[in-house]
Length: 58
Image 1 (cartoon, helix red, strand yellow):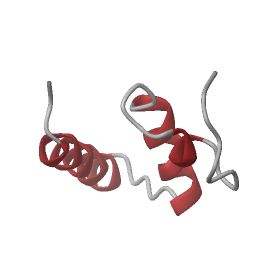
Image 2 (tube, rainbow, N blue to C red):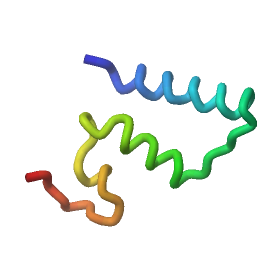
Image 3 (spheres, helix red, strand yellow):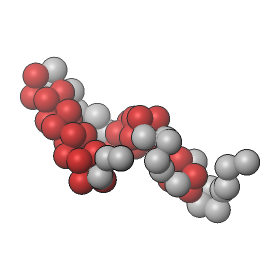
Image 4 (cartoon, rainbow, N blue to C red):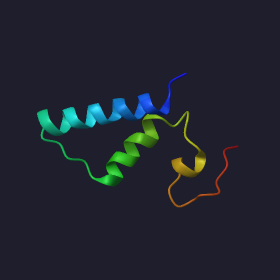
């Protein structure tokens, strides 16, 4: 099982690489969308579905 620290560090490295090499600067919403898609299996439903903090998966 991966630690959150490792997930966050890896994501920061990827963002730094994309920002520098590919001149990509994603906005906050795009970043959150990527994070939700990439780590959906470990995130709470309230984080997965924006605007629905009390949602529960069936």
